[in-house]
Amino acid sequence: MEQHVYAELVGGPEDGRSFIIPTADAALPLGQFTFPAPCDGEDDDSRYDRSDQRADGVWRYQYAGLARSLG
Image (cartoon, rainbow, N blue to C red; front, side):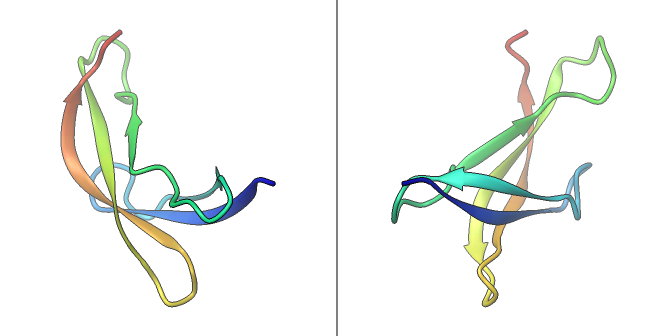
């Protein structure tokens, strides 16, 4: 059975963005997210790493800098 958890981004260009992500039974949600650069032609994507979980159950992902786009 798949369940969903809430996630929030902290810092960087996506600061404050929140969304719901799927997670397998009893497993931690994804350890990292990478978001494409906001403008075409930019090579760097924004990377966020799983940081901690708030008391209300929301997982926080901290801005970890830029990552080279593979595209």
